Image (cartoon, rainbow, N blue to C red):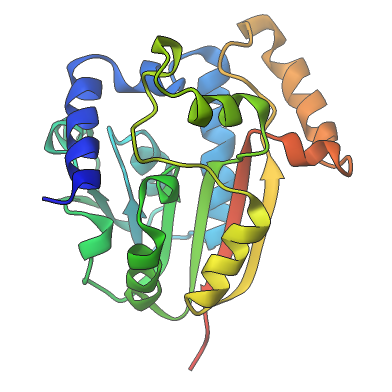
Length: 242
């Protein structure tokens, strides 16, 4: 088996043995608010609406599957980890089919949209992006949220991943600088590609301060240069029509 896949499977087993959402930072009040906003931005960028057939990559324990499915789409959600998929299936979501498969081996389609939260940075993009492009119908949309390598915490996580504080970072995962990620998507055949920094709400923000920090973050996302330090990147792209 590909060493990257072995590492991800091992990591999935460790996560599933505990509380995956808490490990990823989605369990706190700030984390829940952050997840709702992230899912809404991805859904808007992908144009999710009732009746669309949508592929979700790296669904993990199904938190974002639930948020995407709420838009009335027919969702196919895939992940490499059978243990995390067991958590996702336990949610009992209607109109969602969970599939155990590597993104780099995906061949099903066509889909109206492909979406995902924090998944591209786990993948071999040279293999995965052409698969995703082929999975979309002509004119179909792709939308993702990914870690921003220019954010100080994200940078340190990747540089110092062997430290116990960053045990949630897998050996092969990376993060992105938005300009090089845009080029990779264009080279894979996508059009109308935008990659924008967002997200200043840290999961550790105390509950009483979530609203204020979210408002401040919305301002910082619009400040030139400073916005480049945001925690995440919002990616929009399309497959060319015809």
